[in-house]
Image 1: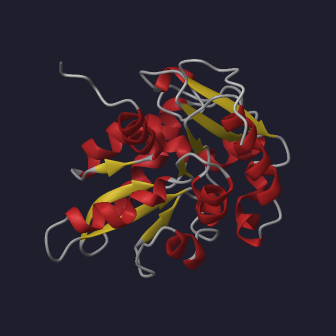
Image 2 (image 1 turned 180 degrees about the vertical axis):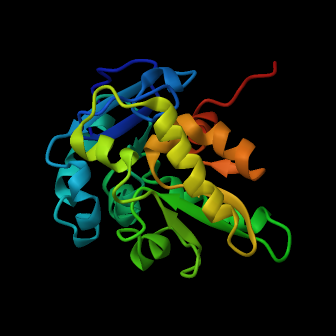
Length: 234
């Protein structure tokens, strides 16, 4: 693949859904979330309404083309703005010559292996009905991984689907924390992975409420960047 290096000094490219809602710091789509530059590319064919359909492969060509475009222009790795894109992990990784981190769910096997005996990792997701066995298998996670979703009729889902440009941050935080508390109360849950990339702004509040380690797309992208640009101690 020819790389024209239109972008210089940008290691991470992020594939974005076409959305209209406000993104707060901590969200993967807010550039100030990261202590390093990132390059965004919107996949205009994909919207939040499509998340339940990613598994059928219909939108894979659009994401593959966008990933290739980012690589051709100079990024050294690809991430995405939707955890349900775990279904495309193998295909996207095979289509470009750089690392691809399609979903925060990729952290599930690693986190599970770090936990003490008798504990397991749970998933906090945008839509529990849409997150299924295929997503878990795609990242090498256990099929019986506990999953709790945000309320289908709640403000969080409405804000994303409706493209709310001025959502109530405190109300969204309360909803996310309450859902996380329900997950943490399930037997044996010892850590949380947030599937939804819009949960990042509330990760600290979730950790404070549950007392559990919390991992999300921000921790994934920062880990990926650290591998691409290791700190020099010389």
